[in-house]
Image 1 (cartoon, rainbow, N blue to C red):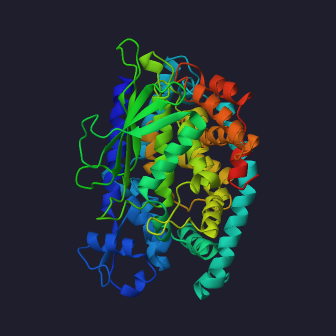
Image 2: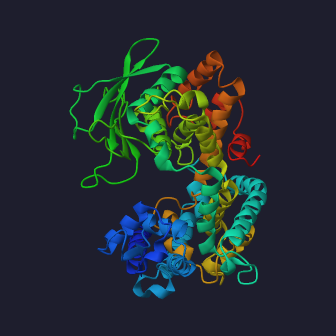
Image 3: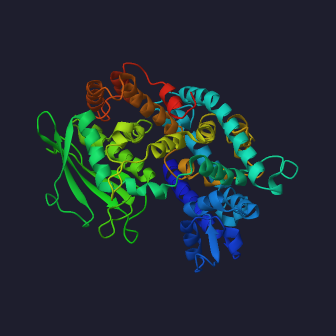
Length: 537
């Protein structure tokens, strides 16, 4: 059947990307080549080469953390160029039997055939039939509106990075030798400029973000805006590791126990995958007589050592708030039909709303200063450090937005308007979309990024990549409701919080998300708050 063949193609696609990623590596032997590289990256590369972090050799691979560190910190242009070119041609025509081009062509042709059999005009229409965005043109409109705002900023950002590289990079970066910064230069110089502008590292802020304090602050926020009380209940449930803690959630008004969750906060590389996620342990359901939903919240923070608590990076704090947002939607549901209770049945492009919404509170002064205290001295986070964290949030926002819009529209173009039998190739389509969405940074000749675009050909994001941006708009607009009443206006913030709990967190998947959002906000979502938060307004 078509679906069996698509499943097979999708698996082969992902395996080819994995295999092609492993095939390439770059070994560096000269210590001068890694000067200025952070110790953590040197250790990672040395471990891959059975070398020594200080004297080498160092082996850089195309695996995410290794590759990104190289693009950010490796000063030798030639090394970066080799890595970049290998990265953007993975699983393409040069990869022998790992070539994904014929697979992509077959996937697109089969999806189009399947959608037509089901009565849709194309695969994008089929995909959107179960999402909040009601049509391809809604997604196109969102993308072109965001493009108008973000492109001028992206062009300015690139000009600033280029000027900085020319000033600090020596003869190699002079206009005569290098008329335009290349793709393998931009990340490196963007990082240098960022360091100079913000002169703040994740490491030096860790002492202000001790996990116990962060949890107290996060639970305090949930109490303040949603009217719930969270209490540790260790011993009340069996746990799979001593690191895991168990909590009960009570309704502040009725004192009733309404939900519980497990928190597994520390990394255990031997037996636990990386990343962070929320999962359902028990869902609310009248049919199975389960009234108290239970969630798993999993993160991979640094474990406590001796008397030193787990000290988090600010990024890890944001991640914790993000996963807690998913957990709240599961735990605070008012729906008793299991299939649409909590996060179940919530449309793909709306399910990130509560999680991204919670991240906004990491930039709210009152919330942050409730927990950002030095774990030894109790000193609050310095004001200038908090300001830099806020400024960093908007650094490079134009280029970042254009990159996301480019991926989203390329996905839409291939699934809504591309005809595999037309004679136009997928790379012609890529070039067309890039001309509109990344004119400031066109892909290099021979770019084969599509051959490793796992999200849409190996995962579930086909005609759905836009949903990252869509959910950002929703979550920023939701937070905008709190900003409008004044974040210091306790009574008003409580009222808006209770409304958010009743609607966005309460209705689960039982009501269309556009109707839920409209009930909460009193109108349909718009992009103004997101543009403001990104500094693109």
